[in-house]
Image (cartoon, rainbow, N blue to C red; front, side):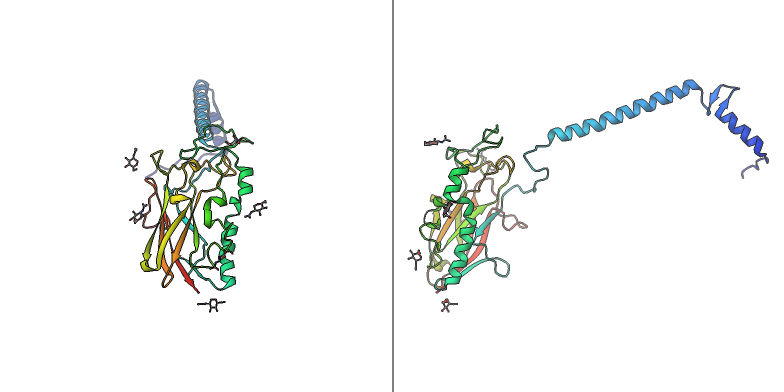
Length: 291
Ligand SMILES: *[C@@H]1O[C@H](CO)[C@@H](O)[C@H](O)[C@H]1NC(C)=O
Ligand SMILES: *[C@@H]1O[C@H](CO)[C@@H](O)[C@H](O)[C@H]1NC(C)=O
Ligand SMILES: *[C@@H]1O[C@H](CO)[C@@H](O)[C@H](O)[C@H]1NC(C)=O
Ligand SMILES: *[C@@H]1O[C@H](CO)[C@@H](O)[C@H](O)[C@H]1NC(C)=O
Ligand SMILES: *[C@@H]1O[C@H](CO)[C@@H](O)[C@H](O)[C@H]1NC(C)=O
Ligand SMILES: *[C@@H]1O[C@H](CO)[C@@H](O)[C@H](O)[C@H]1NC(C)=O
């Protein structure tokens, strides 16, 4: 049990407090000698100096490691996704179905492709990306030697898609049973698709359902290759005029004229079997023509 404190007057209390502030008997100020107070102050000064230094160091390291030309937070994707145009959706999947004899259907499909290929206009590409790129080799750039302190981007023109460019045949084959689709692989900053410097990624389309309905598959550019000079991609700020390399694929539909297809970008660093990422490295779509 606590012992009962003797009752004290207010004056006594004030006196006690005065003694606490300055005790002349043993020369303490607020319970400590001035000498001790100096040590305590020095301790806190040193403590805050060290804390400030640590904090500044952390900020400095953070600023130093931030690359102004790359986003601070990138998708944790290690392997790029693949997309197909015309990007018309059915219930869930991409369903490219059209009517060869219906003008609105043909126009709808070809307009999607014309719009998609706008940045690839030959004139635009020759004006914006006039650097002479060496084909078949990664275009590694350590310096910012292009105008406005940027890096060069290699041109990819619509005409490289040959018969699927929309230049000779503005319907892209949608007025017939030989339609073209365009395959694009998403960009990933600093991604190199192959560790072999002589093996470029290429598109390989396979028929999943309706084998007897597809007679022939053609690739443009030749063999469906995405040239290595389009890699690596350094980001929007570093390469403002960058365009993804494309591959056009032309299918010759026969018989029932519908098929389920899979187009995969094949390369040793591109994975395609990720269960939760169905568009990683490949795209699956339905192609259906009616007459
Ligand atoms: C295709 O279009 C033509 C012309 O518009 C039309 O007569 C025909 O019924 C259409 N076919 C189908 C299966 O919708
Ligand atoms: C490409 O751009 C030029 C100039 O802007 C234009 O004259 C030409 O028609 C365009 N070509 C295509 C296929 O859109
Ligand atoms: C690219 O090569 C062509 C033909 O070899 C040449 O005429 C042109 O000046 C070159 N362009 C640049 C930017 O070096
Ligand atoms: C489709 O259109 C192109 C260009 O207009 C033409 O050359 C081709 O003959 C047409 N094909 C059919 C089957 O009508
Ligand atoms: C390239 O990568 C693959 C898979 O990542 C590996 O199996 C192969 O040994 C590598 N080749 C070279 C030359 O590094
Ligand atoms: C394309 O993929 C199919 C099925 O995976 C395979 O049999 C074929 O060899 C591949 N073609 C090329 C050129 O890689």
